[in-house]
Amino acid sequence: MARDILNEIIEKRKADIARLGICFGFERPTRKRPLHPFIEKAGTILEVKRSSPSKGNIAMGLDPAETARIYAQAGTGAISVLTESHYFNGSLADILKVAEAAPDCAILRKDFLLYPEEVDVAYDFGADAVLLIARILSDETLLQMATRTAALGMTPFVEVRTEDDLRKLKKIRATVDCVAGVNSRDLKNFHIDSLIPAEFIDELGERAVFESGIQTAKDAAFARRLGFAGVLIGEAAAKNQPAAQKLVEGFLHAKPDGFGKFWKRIAQMRKSLRTRNPGQPIVKICGITNADDALLAAELGANLLGFVFSAQSPRKTNTAEAQDVIAQVKKQFGKDAPLCVGVVTEHESPEANEALGLANGGILDAIQFHGCEIPAELESADFGYYKAVRLKSSDEAQELANHFQHGIPRALVDAYSPEALGGTGKRIDGETLQTLSSQTALWMAGGISADNIQEIVKSFHPELVDLSSALESFPGKKSAEKMRAFCRAVR
Ligand SMILES: O=P(O)(O)OC[C@@H](O)[C@@H](O)c1c[nH]c2ccccc12
Image (cartoon, rainbow, N blue to C red):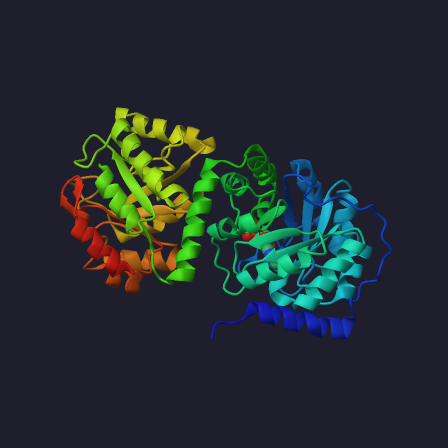
């Protein structure tokens, strides 16, 4: 059985408190600073974090006062102080130091708090907000602690990760106002998935915070683009403090937009498939050129439709055709219509410009950059985008990790073929797929059909499968029979 770190942390804390008391041996101060509002408008929370169970040493020698000054200078409105000692090497004394060094910042006490009395301790040491992890607290204790936090004038910051956590949050919100955070890291196995916050955001209320896994300014921007009011950044800020300002600006300069909306819809699709039909991947049917194919695909439950804007492709479409097809699909399926994606293979080609025009006009929901880079000017585009990488070898699979460093949660992998840019029916080798599926949520294209989809799902657990040629009667025209057979097989 995997080691349950969460449990270990809690057991050690209980033992410490039994031995040292609720202040862990520190003298209990009287609060000196005034209370600060916490995430009342969009802002960042930078964390004083020396180490963690997942990463080990992060910034062991960090000086809390110096760090707090740098964070305040970087423009953050709030600072999180990890006070857990065994795994994070923090202490209550750190709060006192941060409070003195950053008098204008709100302070969050970040710990695995278990007892209502610990809320009073947080107040006395100078905290303005208190982390309450829904997963480790019963309904009653959570309510009691949130109520106590609010009664003292602090902000309860409730962290959720599961549906049951969400239920608890809703229950306490009936009586206590609180900020809700969603952790993109699973505290049980440390996996980071930036689409988890996207799944939850619509249920978290206005003051929602995206927690963990933020490495770059673009990642921070992604949280804002999804619509989060706050973002909590630990490792990336603590380890590289001169870069803290860039992280803050990345978040503050972005705004909720169509890019965030696209990923939110992907996250919601994944969630609804998970509840209705666990294991079934999101299905993207690509190479759509006509309304009959599009309408049948939508009726059969395709989640995304792909429109190819590439001169070389036998499945290429154009503005007028795509516009007409998409209008018919949206008319018939309304808000349940599949998402429509333009596939682009070459920058600044007339075809790429047509696709970008449709995306800017809100007709295409996203652009897939297939085998070409994403143009830098898209950083504030009001539509979704991601990259499709054509993999030649398993070595390249390693490089794929880089594509997730830019605030874009997924990349699609396709098989490489010297003859064409896609739609060759060729499949990526099993070893590479295995590597990828163990590292990331797999978005897979190339050689998928009704005949092999069950084996693919079983072996590689793709989150999304993208098909084109296997569903055709001839290039550019889908076969109703093959589409039906595929949809039966994928369920
Ligand atoms: O270092 P990161 O990946 O930026 O994560 C920061 C913060 O979200 C993380 O430390 C955290 C989130 N929730 C927690 C609960 C307890 C301890 C720590 C945490």
